[in-house]
Amino acid sequence: MNWYTGLATYAIIWGPVMFMMLPWGVRRIEPGDLGEGDDPGAPEKPRLWLKAAITTVASGVIFALVYLVVVSGVISFRQ
Image (cartoon, rainbow, N blue to C red; front, side, top):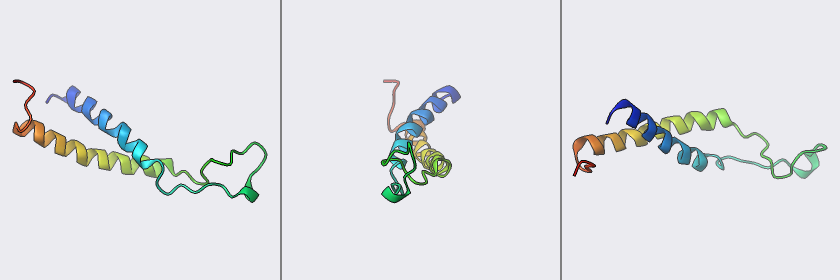
């Protein structure tokens, strides 16, 4: 696996993992705390930087497993 294929594989893994991380720890804004123009379904503290960091680490672990499987020859795309 060359670096370009590895980067593309990592990006493909990162996207779905981020979507799986987004709902974790989300709390809605209480109805009494809504200001004018606030959406009642919006999260109070989305913590996107923390979720992006966790996603990056989790994607790295998943990518390492995929890389090991491809390099070891368990799954071959050459046949």
